[in-house]
Image 1 (cartoon, one colour):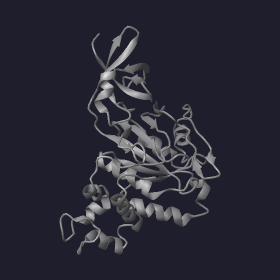
Image 2 (cartoon, helix red, strand yellow; image 1 turned 180 degrees about the horizontal axis):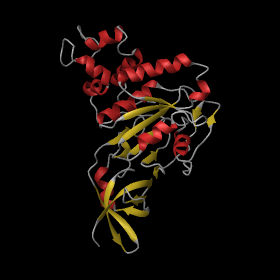
Image 3 (cartoon, one colour; image 1 turned 120 degrees about the horizontal axis):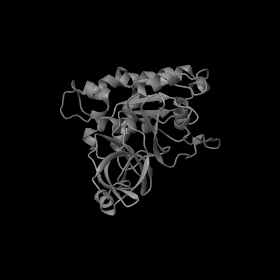
Image 4 (cartoon, helix red, strand yellow; image 1 turned 90 degrees about the vertical axis):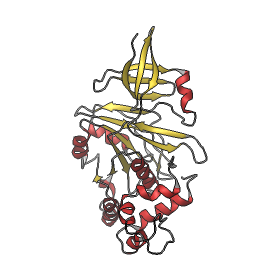
Length: 308
């Protein structure tokens, strides 16, 4: 039978669900072993969002080829592993969901995701979740967070699934697009997706009170169609995010605010660590680049092999 093309909408180990987007007509498929061997350093040779060729063989759809990716979000799979894991592919936008508290946001973790999104050309929006829980407790913290990331050039959307704040804005932005929702465990990704479309039922879980960290609840990567239009990909909660395929000398290019300032550096190349006449360090000293973002950059230079 002639090969056809579809998009991977669910990854369940060696079995997949495909759909010929934009139509939502889901069917199962399996992967040929020879295709699997082509990406030995990648833990998952096929990711949700991948466009693939498949052929019908008896009662089974068999994936025969992975088509070239427009972009993808990737992380080092474990702290000390040389292997990498592709979170999702062919994305129109990544929504990085964070909570200032419950669980507390880790800025170096967030910055690693943003650097990777910049590296692979994926527009990123930061979603600040659960704002109804802590706005009255720390309004200055919210303002400071927004100043850091809006100053870097990223949209920041404050949301609450309880009050509905920000939900309509995200729902409208998702129309006609493939959108990834990613972040640490417990920040409310699945609840946010359900708020965007109440007919969906991605897994949700409670926060571990002992550690104020989210328990892993979503174990599979899965794409859902939104009734309002567009598609969302729910991803498992991530605890560590190691950089992949970026040299230390290149990291500064993927901090937009540092890239803008670097044009004024006296020396080229400049590591923005010790060189005299460094415009980036000067911008940090003058408060034009946040100290938090600059410290994340220094941490990436020092810890390129592992991060938690």
